[in-house]
Picture 1 (spheres, chains in turn cyan, red):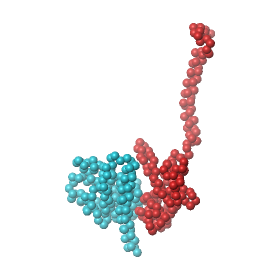
Picture 2 (cartoon, rainbow over the protein chains, first blue to last red):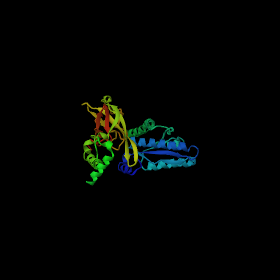
Picture 3 (cartoon, rainbow over the protein chains, first blue to last red):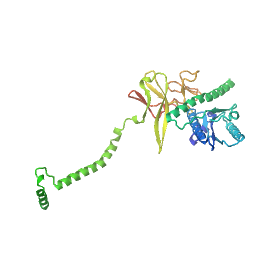
Picture 4 (cartoon, chains in turn brown, yellow):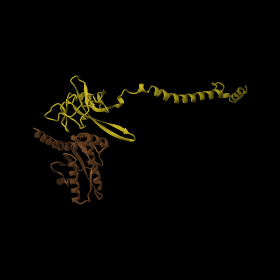
Length: 162
Length: 186
């Protein structure tokens, strides 16, 4: 589900099935590496949309969590923490952050939350079909991370029932 | 007649034309007018005719069919994933849509093209990926299951069978409809 009206209506109608939040984590930079940050933003956005498309029924894709690279580390960490808390309070059982930046891995990873880290790739000169195959290749690698987490949780719950 | 006299005079002035076929000014003008008005009439009538017989000329639904790049001979009894693309225009914004289908031949040799979109909440199903449920379509989101023919397995979340694409074979290539259609159920 995406953060648009029609999907949100469906989300609230079948909330018990959609227990996973996907949050793109995006860095904005106005210094020399601003081009890279633009490139990475596009890449993350494409990946997030493709993931959402394939796992629509269990994932809610949120608008990105954006931070400036000039923010102090503590501020970024507290932003991530409060997003996590907020989403858990909303009833999500799994939270995935999607980013090309692994700096905040430690603050993200825990029992409910996982960082889907992807290495940044320059997209500028790629033709459309190459871009698509790169995205699909990357999705194939992210897929198990998500599915495994779901399955281990589903199994835990089934065992509890038995 | 005064005009005839004038024409005779004109002819008299041009003796070299005498043995050729003569066209009078009157004839020339009437031919010209007939020609021009013929074109004008055609310009108004032809489009109307074209509209009137348009349904006959329209290629039978094949304009909505998209080539997949899969050869008919490569379709086996094992479902395989096929992707195909087409341009979709929304107002002034044109975008490329990629669709996926699971294609196989059933026991009667009929081609079946199933939509991968789970009827529960829209995840993409996969063929034969759950080791506990061989030869079924499996939805990873909520463990939905479908038989090979797309029928949902009772007791799993989906409440209807997978949608199907229309297909046709042209020059040995599989063509699929842009959108899959529900097969009933629910």
